[in-house]
Amino acid sequence: MVSKDTSMASLATQICTHISSIFTKPTHPYPQPLDLMVTELTATSSQKGRVFLYGVGREGLMLKALCMRLAHLGHSAHLVFDMTTPPISATDLLIASAGPGGFSTVDAICHVARSNGARVLLLTAQPETGSCVKHASVVCYVPAQTMADDEDGDVVKSRPLLPMGSVYEGALFVLFEMVVYKLGEVLGESTEAVRSRHTNLE
Image (cartoon, rainbow, N blue to C red; front, top):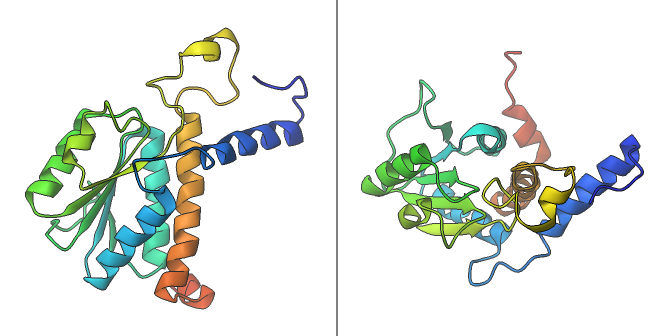
């Protein structure tokens, strides 16, 4: 329910509070998302493996942002379908997102990754019913609203501040920022080292 105060500061507070609340929800029996992602990325780094990322729509944009920061942290990070994306192999990790549980392209990409021996970390808000879960090595459960359930209950009775998949997508952005921070600590990457890897072609 949106507050009657629709000032910029109030709207920002409501949005941030809503997204923050996602990280107070239990994820059992699935691992805590932050720890899981840091563990998987650290393991991939220790094997000198590469990280591949894929998502559709706004979820894909969040994964693009994560891909950039992983490159800044020194990972060999690649977006699926980029012209220079190398082949995936057994030491690599695919991070894919299917908030509502399944997308045909995400299903297909995850299947190809597993067929080539790579690990697949699937981000989703629907771990029990989604079609993509069967391809996952590990499931990263983000318990947020997506288009799979945005018309349930009270949501349809009023105009939502965060419609359709916005809560899930916003939660991904926040989760990824936490992952980058924690991963930087684990890998011992200084601010200067991270900054030195930022492109100068802009």
